[in-house]
Length: 74
Picture 1 (cartoon, rainbow, N blue to C red):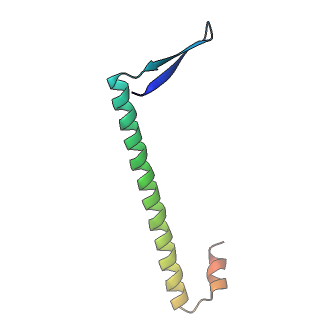
Picture 2 (picture 1 turned 45 degrees about the vertical axis):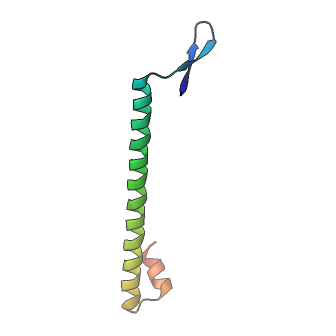
Picture 3 (picture 1 turned 180 degrees about the vertical axis):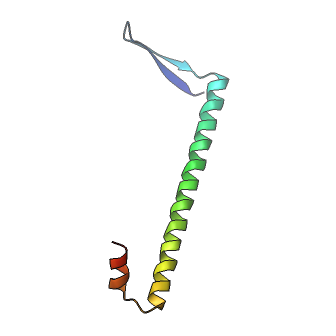
């Protein structure tokens, strides 16, 4: 079972305590929320990269060189 470290600042004493069912449920919910946020962030980055590649391909189709396209991005 997962545990947490409890520190008594007045004495400096530490103890390891098992998590309650509520704390375990919250920990799992937080982990899922983080995973969802990370997946959304990665999907957004992939979409942005795909849009950039499509835009560069369109500019190349118009006759711009790679150097000219790179200059536009600066």
